[in-house]
Image (cartoon, rainbow, N blue to C red; front, side, top):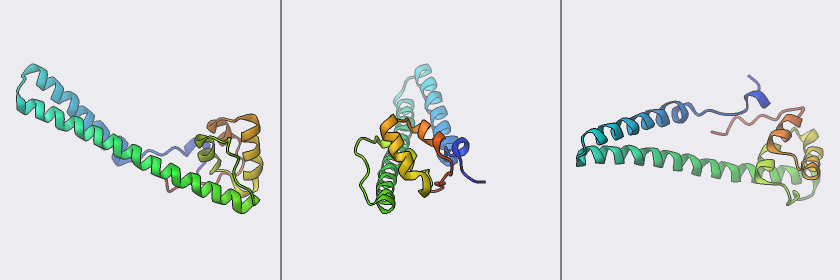
Amino acid sequence: MSQNFQNHKRIFKPFHLFLIPVSLLGFIYSLYVLFNEFNYANASISLLFFLVLLSSALSRVSALKVQDRAIINEFKFRYYLLSGNTVNENLTKSQLIALRFASDEELIDLTKKAVTEKLSATAIKKSIKNWKADYNRV
């Protein structure tokens, strides 16, 4: 299946459909048990579920930040190869990340349009005619 605006968002099934829901349900249940019968064992279990949720969320956020940095640097290098110029500093992080989906043929013009019209990331993605898929993001 080819990637486009409608299907480009990624759900990482082990994280979104297993780890977070199971951990959240476990945490909620452990709180229920803790409030019905307070003791240190139940408090410890609640704390462990909370730490699992927190560490899962923090690891996901950290991974996405690293990916965003890689995407931005790849985009800047690609833009330089195509135009011979550096990327306009007025572009935001979300604009740069959205522009990565533009094909080489439309990248430079769409980048200029994003700067002059201050397009949102969603507007940039909707403006792309020839989608350059990114299947590596998790």
